[in-house]
Image (cartoon, rainbow, N blue to C red; front, side, top):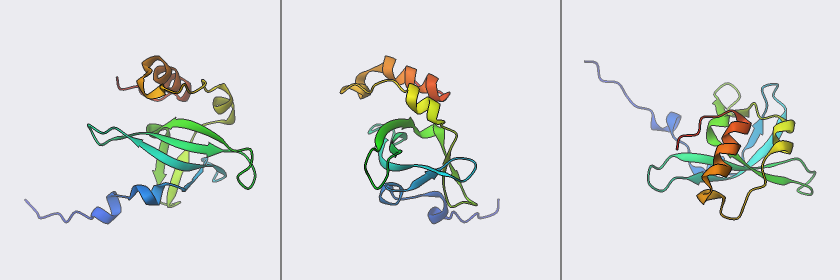
Length: 119
């Protein structure tokens, strides 16, 4: 069996490098910015990105919870891409204070963004 070198730098990224990263749509247009990641403390998996969309110079921006699986890293663009549409953001359910304990909210969110809900 050949010895395969594992390039950790290529496959891993620091959360501090992801926070503040611009997200583009498939046409390459900037659509939002990753503000923070929500990581499951038991599995270590990233489940959500809290992203800001819209606004100008920080005014009028809105925060949205986006399933991590709705984002894709594009090696060629050296950044994250999404197919999330403005209409989906407008239809997003209001995030309750206890959203992380509200399975129905999470199910509605995944249905909206057409991503797989794992629970």
